[in-house]
Length: 401
Ligand code: RFL
Ligand code: PHB
Image (cartoon, rainbow, N blue to C red; front, side, top):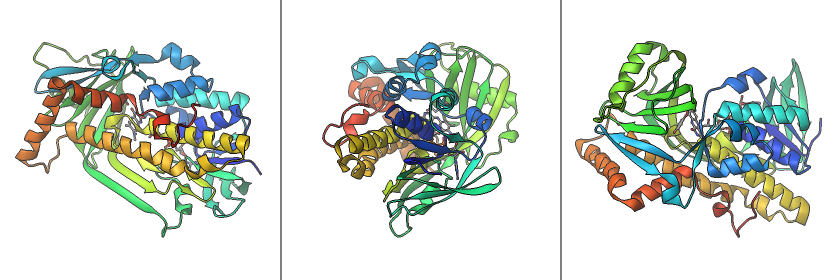
């Protein structure tokens, strides 16, 4: 098999990249190790930044998102029983976010790819990326019990944190920047209308809690739990009781309970692999970087990476200049590190660190108080949450998608 761009992984990064390249008239083949149902059901992100929404629309993949997604103009911060709303449009000159689940983004992109795009092979596991330093990089993969080779001009590793693409960067050239946290998130999906019309991020002495949603009838909620917690150790009523305690306010707000339809535990990690490019291999999304979910940034970063790659390749085709491809890593990493900083700040602002000293706990409360009293502190949070514009990180004012 031969193609221009070999894409490893059909998560949001790989699927959107395939769509952007198809629209630009560039051939690509997507290899995905899991089956379609698994990829479409995997519960993950829920928040799309304004820039992500714009990119999906421009790629002709925004129809259902615009019909079913929920535009959110703010979030609520809670602590000590009090609530403080962060008003995004007022603080950012009109920006907002969209609640539209990653599962739905993936379903929409898969349907488009199968209908209009190039090959997307499910059950095709990449075994290794080879020859990245030369002109003809290859992906060795296994599909339907047979080993095969995909020959490419470029390979983009969109295969997530546990993928194989990153391993093709020689260890001597790789640098990893990492932090793990002593806590995780226990997440549930529940068939009950959300108890608030915007997301609620709560800091409590017993730990962090998040109220989110998937639709007007489905709630998504999270609890901070110790790292390594077994989700089966938590009964449904126990989860609701704990959510109620941590989300409680002094003004009579009530949490609605309903049947729990899914339960899982997500570890928390910050991780950046540099460089994001080695020869003709480019890393994108979780394959190159992980953020803790408190900032709702992971999917949006993946989108930023593949937009940068697609633009750079189109620029090369149209002008003969490889300048944008050469600056791919630098362009992406500027935005990645801003998102790492924001996600770290949100995480340390809202979680209860079992090792924190009383001094550090007082500082955490003082940081929270700032959002209620300082417009510039609130504006900084709103800017980070609604997203760092894709073009701001690009050298020389790169054109929009
Ligand atoms: P993915 O989604 O992990 O997709 C990688 C794909 O590659 C496949 N794969 C392979 N295919 C072929 N050969 C191999 N050898 C392969 N190895 C792996 C995998 O099967 C998979 O299909 O990475 P991608 O595309 O970079 O997308 C990243 C996002 O999924 C991730 O950053 C977000 O889900 C993170 N995240 C959130 N991001 C947000 O922007 N907003 C949020 O609100 C948000 N909430 C979350 C989150 C992640 C969470 N978890 C579970 C980690 C909430 C949670 C709880
Ligand atoms: C979600 O709805 O899954 C979600 C929302 C916001 C976050 C993380 C996850 O920060």
